[in-house]
Image (cartoon, rainbow, N blue to C red; front, top):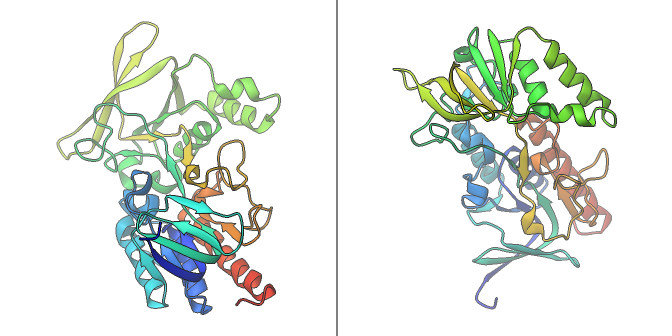
Length: 335
């Protein structure tokens, strides 16, 4: 450890999506001189988070013509740097949150911080099959993991769409997509919905399932998995090869869109049990706050939000976290 470069800061921000950068902008303007460890392909995603994996972002205010996700995150970065945030393209490997000042480690640095904002996000779970990847497949060319983000795109309007999943998020996304698609297929590997088993303890889930089952624009493909996605002459998704797990029959299902709705994986493993998490692995924060169970440690964005998961809501929670950090430091005479 003696060979690590050592830095000291009032605030260390871990992560670099809209939550992390909004926190950085607010904190830097408050003269807190934050240090951001943006990560280097952390969790398989470039610095900037999940927005970097999207094409046109059309629901972020201020850009009426839309903007590529990568360009938007680069603007976040430029704005953070403009106000004095020090950004390092390094991934946090471990933390010591046992006492203040906290210690944050990468392979190259040891950062001593009076406060920490964790904004490491959550990665959408995806299934590997032929045609599903970025390089040779149809990811961002018809395949997505966010119906709210991408469902209104012209390529999906009045065309058949498929959703993979059987939980409440799949039911919500399918229902949302019926606004745009001519038909929505829900592809589920079981012969019943997971939602039906838990509707007694979570009535809303049962309502979502019932609404999907009764919607004339939604068709369920039970006991089925996607074997392959194929494209058209424009290089966009054109359809799926769907296998029935009971009969072994493979059916051709023409669709213009496919949405994964099988959950997200919050980037919290590196915390090593030091921060309280909920049952799904998301950071537990005080209701109405970004504060965690450790005073001086805050969480913002998708790493603590399993409900909305939007760039704009992440940015809002990043603002909250920065303001809470400023107040915390003032109360401790360290601002």
